[in-house]
Amino acid sequence: MRQFTADYLDETRRGMWEDRRALDPLELGDADRVLDVGCGTGELTRVLAEESPGEVIGVDADADLLAVAADHAPVVAGDATRLPFPDGSFDLVVCQALLINLPDPAATVREFARVSRDRVAAVEPDNGAVTVDSSVAAESRLEGRARRAYIDGVPTDVSLGGTGTRRVFDEADLDSVETRRYDHERTVAPPYSESALSAAKRKASGEGLTDDRTTMLNGDLSAEEFDDLRAAWRAMGRDVIEQMQDENYRRTEVVPFFVTVGRV
Ligand SMILES: C[S@@+](CC[C@H](N)C(=O)[O-])C[C@H]1O[C@@H](n2cnc3c(N)ncnc32)[C@H](O)[C@@H]1O
Image (cartoon, rainbow, N blue to C red; front, side, top):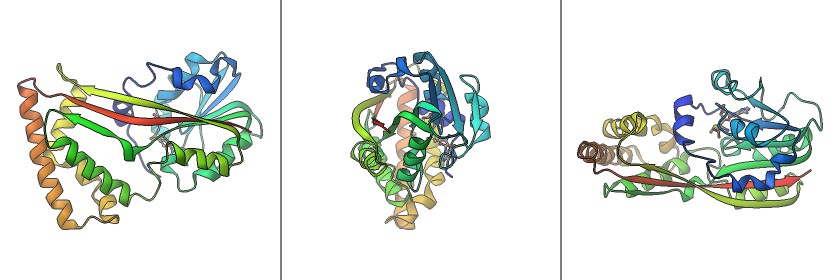
């Protein structure tokens, strides 16, 4: 199972769901019992609890992340592929950025349908369609190259959002499937946050890329190409830090998420 840190989830979900219109098809106002599967630190669980009049429960396999999510809702340790609940226990079973991490997303969605008596939903990104716009000229190109190498080597479909999730819902025999796109935009601009400063340092040290080396080499990228990419990446990181020192650095990243809802 791929591991995530609370800091990573906090940073990558920053500002997400300030605009909640894409969640309208979940009919949260009309849900007495909601289950958030793979809830992590509870970034979506908190939104569900704010919007739904009923009980919201988070479930995850990672005890450290669950301890953070417990601030937002009751939580249960469990495996998404074998949920510890009887059939038809919830009005809505939902996940965010879970299916992209699983080897058999359709089997997991069938398990969601087993414990739901009405709706199943998934909020999944298309990581192949992420865009980056930066004041450092090389950043967008290098991030695109690193992203393609990662997607090529990762064993699950991290671009599943959009048509992929719809296909999975169809395979799981859900009815009335509907999908909405929601672009999550994150901007870095002065005054720079602690996490923006540490992200820049990680670029300049090459640390972030090194963490993904094994995955990238699983795909088409050779060790030599990885070293070249890392050298260019570190130079780009130094330019980011230099621009930050002059308060000239700006970066905007857009991650397209897709909200897919179906009925059992
Ligand atoms: C990318 S994180 C998303 C967390 C949260 N839903 C969010 O969007 O902020 C994926 C989460 O799925 C959990 N996860 C992965 N495989 C799982 C499984 N088989 N059963 C339960 N949780 C799982 C991980 O522990 C992690 O918390």
